[in-house]
Length: 72
Image (cartoon, rainbow, N blue to C red; front, side, top):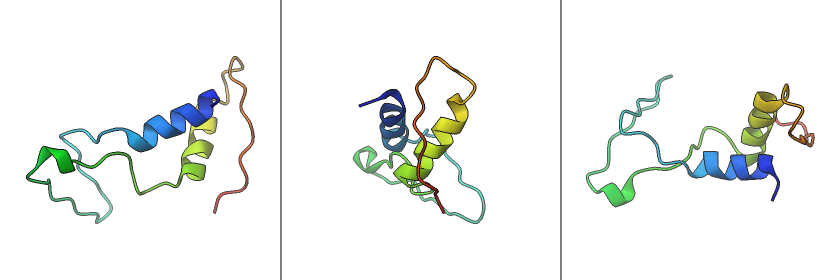
């Protein structure tokens, strides 16, 4: 797995912070059981997250960044 793939995986599996408060009309009711606390996001697909991370590191030439297919 390359750096970008690892970053995408970690981003999509990151436990949301306790003060998570979505905007844009999205509602969120905190689960009563900590074991059901959400992780990652359903706002981006893995390909979209990969494109975002590639954009984030695009100025850092130490990383090899592979292009991602067009994401709609």
